[in-house]
Structures are given as C-alpha cells and as structure tokens.
Amino acid sequence: MAERRSGGLTWVALALSLVVCIAGGALLWLVLTSGGAQPPEAVEPVEQMLEPKSFDEYSWEELAEVAHLVADADSDAEGRATAEKYGVAVGDTRSLPLADGRTAALTVVGIRADERSDGSGKAGLTLMASPIAQRPMNDEGTNAGGWEASDLRAWLADEGRELLPEELSDAIVSVVKRTNNVGVTADAAAVTETSDELWLFSASEVCGDPRWFVAEYGAEPNPHTGYVDFSVYDALLAAEGAQYEYFRAAGVSGSSDPSGALALTYGGAETSWWYRTAYPYSFTGEDAAYFYQVMSSGYPSTTGLASEPAGVVVGLCL
Image (tube, rainbow, N blue to C red; front, side, top):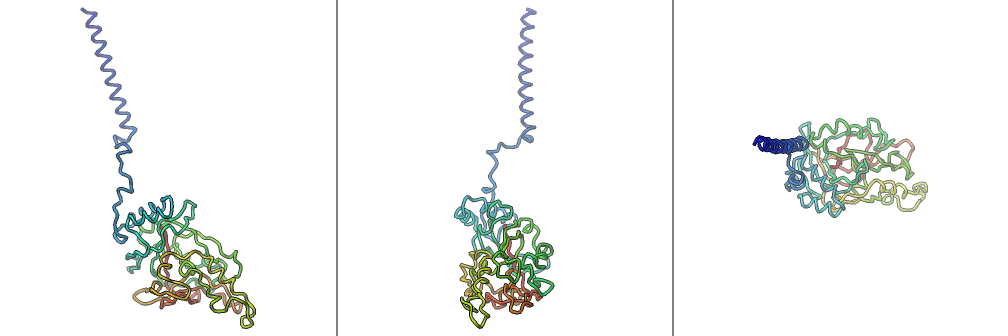
C-alpha cells in the first residue's frame, strides 16, 4: 500500500512539474513578445489605417504618409493611382500658414517628379508654396556662382524654412536640382547638381524649353549681335530640369501663361518672383548681375538685378 501511494505521489509531482514548465514557457513568450502584443498578422497595415480625404483635409503628417505611399509604388503609373486613391492630384491647392502670420498657398505641381538626393528613388509629391517672402537673390548685384552660391538659397535653408509649419518642415525630403551654378557662361558643364530641401523653380521647370535667346536674337549669328551664337545659352536654360505637370497642363511656355498660373501675390499685391536661373550672357563683361524672374503680371520672362527683392516662390518635396 505504501509503495502504491509513493508511486501515485510521483506521478502527481511529474504532472505539476509539466504544468510549471508550460506556464514558464508561456511567460517567457509573453516577455519576448513585449507583454502579449498581438501577432503581426493582427496589426493593421499603415495604408489601411490612413483614411482617404481631400488634399486640404490631411494633417501634415498624413500628407507625408500619402507621399511615402506614392513614392514606394513600383512604377509611376502605380504611384499616380495611389495618389488618386488618396484624393491627391496635380493642381490641388490648400492654404499654408506661415510663422510670420501670413498665409501662402500650397499647390501640387508634380507626382513622382523629383529624384531624392540619397539615391533611394523618387519623392512622392512636389509642391509649390506661393511667395513666402520678398527677398533679393544676393546681397550684392551679382549672379556669380548661380543658385548654388546664392544668399537666397542659404536663407531658405535657415530662416525661410522656419516660416513653415514644423510638422510640414519635418516631412520635407531633399531632392536633386540641376542648375547653371556658374552664372555668366556658355559652357554646358556649368549645369551641375545640388541637393535641396527648399528651392526655387528653374525657368525650364516652369516654362519647358524657353528658347528666349533664339526668340530675341535669332538662331544664327548676325552682324547686329557681333556674330554670337545664342543657341548655346538656350541649351543652358533647357538643361535645368523638365517642366512640371502643373505648368504644362496650364499651357505655360516661355512666352505665354494663358490660365494665369504664374500671376501670384504677396501681401495682397501682385509681385514678380524669382527663378533660380541665372542670366548667362553678359553684354559688357561687367553686367553679370541678373537672374530670371516671372513678371508681376504673370508673364513668364523678365530679368531682375540680383540685389533687388522679388517674390520667393518655394518648391519642396514630400
């Protein structure tokens, strides 16, 4: 009888040990999985959590998430379909509150149109902020060094950026910009790349192939211009990036803005605004002082002295 009781107690002890092992294993699993978090398959994907809205209804964080989804698409066509799914299209506009109390307009000008500086692919959305300030391009009257060396570029990276809502500023991605970064030159090698988070639009990004020199001086050298071949200067202008869809759809060219897309205001008044494009030709050798602008009327082409203020229309990507 004693032997039977001893054997029974042994089996009970073994059963209890097995229960303790199972409980310990379960506890270890809970610890390793952060206290019982749901298995991965139960976590809802970010894309499903983001509710489609109109462009002007998204928070800045939500808009950045839409841009990420567009950028992560396998093709431009899929990226455009993703943007459409989330209610974002080229030409959409919303108000942009600035830190100085003013309000600008923020417009979608391109979808998957710019290359990220880090080589990771295309940015999802390219946006245009209507004049956020009026500033000179340079403190001195020169275009030497072009956009890359300009005082306005440095201002945008610092004080200009501080005008934007913090949540929007934090979401901006750096992209590649091609520009004549010499100034007065006929050398195609003057068009080089910079990495920018806030930038000015080039003449070609707005107008396509402007052909301003050929339009004014003709395609062939002639006695009235000292036998200068001006076509090389048009080639410089055309090399600063492809025209954005927004401007192309609006019919903007080097000589026309039929829909008034370029007629912008600052403080309620019409204003001229800068391109980042330097005027590449010098007539006297001492007049290397100009950048291209949009006229206050919205006409696509004029030039402004670098040291005189004009509207600062900003490009940025998410």
